[in-house]
Length: 172
Image (cartoon, rainbow, N blue to C red; front, side):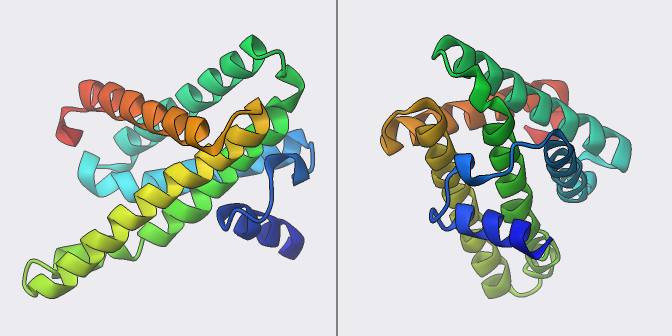
């Protein structure tokens, strides 16, 4: 377990690549569960409950996995799906988990503006870094430049946010 955590940490620091992940359906399943749990924890307050937060997290993960599968097939690299999907879900869960303690800080920031501002800046930094990490994964999986990988990650984020805001108006 420690080796896996180290892999995801190195991946988030751009020191590892998705091909360094074990090609394991069980690990993909575990990273999916971790991603969903963290997503639910982050979205439950905004969406007003666990059920809509789970639905939103599930839709987001399905969209990511579906688009990744399509892009890898179009690029002629479908065998890379398992490791790339594991890398995207695991790194996303790890980075999103870092945002969990920021929610109460942002709420407390309504009474103390400096705390809320710092929490907001850190959250934005995490969001930007998440796009870089996803771009890094896509760079390796698709054999494109980091810039193209990051642009694909940003395009996915915008598409996902638009879809979720349409389905869950409280996110808009």
